[in-house]
Structures are given as C-alpha cells and as structure tokens.
Length: 176
Length: 293
Image (cartoon, rainbow over all chains, first blue to last red; front, side, top):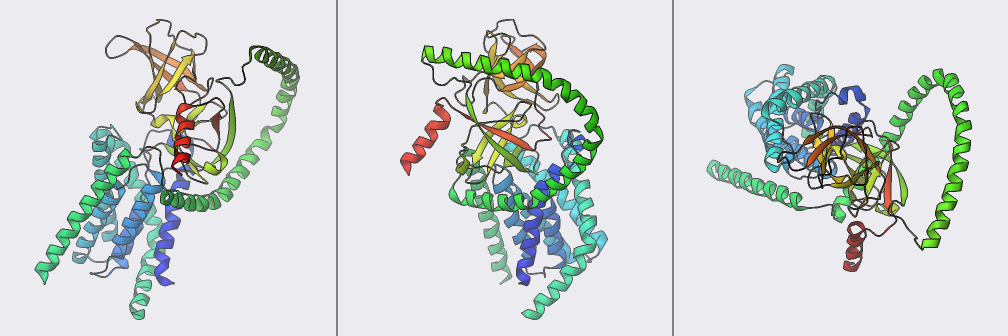
C-alpha cells in the first residue's frame, strides 16, 4: 500500500495542474505572462531529498514517468519535459549528498532546478520551432512568473509533506 | 567495480539521450493520429479530470449565481422588451426558412456548404504548458468527433479538433495556429475579398489574414467569416473583425490583423461543428481508417 502513495499523490497533482489553470481569473491570464505549474517537478524534488537514500531513485523515476504522462496528455511533443525533469532531478540527486536536509536547502534546490528545467524546455521548444520568443522575453514573461508561482506551491506543500516523507521512508526501511 | 559503474552510467546516459531524441522526432511527425495506448491514457485521465472538474465548476457556478441574483430585476425588464421584438423576428425567420427550403427543393440542392450538425461539449481541462494553446473536452469519437472539425462558442470560432480519442478530444485554439493550420476565410460584406488566416500575433493578440488577390477593398471594421472552401469547416463561422490593414513583407498583397470574436481564455462550453457536406479531409481519413480495419 505504502509504495503506491507517492504515484497517487503525483497523479492527483497531474490532474490539479490543468484544472487550476482554468480556475485562475481571466484578468491574470490576459496579462501575457506564462504561469506554468511544475508541481510534479517540485514534489519529485521533495521525494528525492526526503524519501530517497543515496542509492535509490524513487524521485527521479516518479518524476520521469509523470513527465512522460504529462506530455502524453497535455502537449503534442513527447520527450521534452522528460529530458528537462530528468536533468533537473538528477542534478538534485547529485547535490543533495553535499547538503543538509532543511528548508533553505530545499528552497534553493527547487529554485535552481526550476530554472534549469525551464531553460531546457525553452531551448528545446525553440529548436523544434514551437515558440519564437527572444531570450529576454522568455526570462521576463515566463521564467520569473513560473519560478515564483512554483515557489509559492513549495511553501504550501513543504510543511505538509517534508516530515511525512521522512516518516514514510523510515517505515519503508523497516519493511525491508 | 567503480569503473564498471561509471561505464554503466555513461551507457544509461547515452541510451536515454537517444530515446529522448527518437521520442521528439517521432512526435514531431505525428499528425492528429493517435494510437490506442495514447487514447486509453488520455481517456482515463479525462475521466479523473471530469470527476474533479464537475464539483469545482458547480461551486464556481454557485458564486456566479449569487452575483447574478442582484441584477435579475433589471435584466428582466430589458428581456421583456426584447422578447416582443424576438417574437416578430422568429416569425420572420420561420417564413424565410420555409421559403428558402422551397426554393432549394426547386433547384434540387440538398445540403449547403454552410450546413452543420452541432456536437455540444464541456471543457474539462486546459494544457498547463501554455506554449501549447490546447483545451480538452468531454466528447470523443464515440460521439462523432473527428480530427480537423471546427470548434465554436456562442461568440465565434475558437479552433479545431487536433486529436480525438474515444471519450475525449483535444482542441487546438486559434491562438496557437500557424502556417500549418490555415483557415480559408472571406469578408462577409464583400465576396471579392478572400484569403487565408495564417497565424496568430502574440504581441497584438490578433489573427493574421492574408488576402490572396489584391483587390484593394480590404478595410478596417469588416467582418471575417470562414468561407467553407478549405475543405474542413462549413461556411459562415464568425472569426472576427479587422482591426488594421497593412502591406505584407513583399509589398504584393495586403495583410490584415483580425481581432478574434471569441474569448480564448474563458471557455466553458463549446460546440464542435460536424459539416454536413462531404469534406475530403475529415471524411476521407475515416474511410481510409475503416478500410484498414
């Protein structure tokens, strides 16, 4: 039962992502800014930091799997989110062994990996021809609002899940 | 052992890069066709989205209703006076329809290029990746939706069906149109002015209308409707009004910016347009598919 709980949470986030976009008041959407929810990535980072051991890959595997589902359902192009999320999560996986597990570190890692993921997304969409924004436009219109809105999401879910993920991890270890 | 591990990591890295590149290439070439696995996954998620979205929609509706109650009296007065006009208008329309049918039967015309069957659908989600202007609705192939059908709201045209699975379908909004998704259009007041909608300008939030013949009769304020000559959409779907006219980059034809009539952001209910007259693009595709089966 325990092992299903992470994918179930991610699946709920996957669905909520599309619905919150519809719920935002149209005055905000009309501002020309792009608010992209990367909740799957943020939650996968939490899994990587607080649930994974040094040699387990639950965060990366879940993140990659749900990035693929995300693209299958919401976009026409496959593989781009997959690559961006995989690179960002692997970076977190490499960095976490040098850092403590606390809120500030989580905050910084989430911010950095959001920026990395967004740049990979933009670069690939630009190469493929899906967008034709300039780099400065991309940074002011998409990168900053997106990072801010996802940090807001982190502030909401961190108190709920950080402790809980560690408890689940201990229970998981006891079972083994 | 560490060296072997490092080697294995390298192999994993390269294989995953190759897989990603293959995936991107594969999905770039795919055009509207969806296989059974994709359909199954989108339908399953669509079901969950439906379950979550209905109560959410209900609560939004509730708050809207409270707002509406305040204005009910005023609206009632206005509507009453409009109802009188409407009655005479309805009578007139009935007469005209009858006359139209009689004349058509005289000429032996069964279907017009403007005739269509509406399929009503509700929006269940919008793509969180806003580089793709896509929405998902709760009607699919089982309800008769096919790729490339036009989609309208009460205000005007909003896009076309880009892929349809069994229970849900994905709609590409006009704001995501490019030179690969063109619409054949005509100016409503003047049949001589016709051309193509060739894309969307994000800065001005307008559609780009290129005139095919340089008639010189393109003016601001004209209404643009679909011409029905593109082979996919029926005639007479309202697209927008012309907000400005300019020469194109080569100075040969005129380009116009068209202010879309429909709102692309606040969409809840849509009508999918099934054109009655034979459409080589929509109907042929399904025939080929049926033959394959």
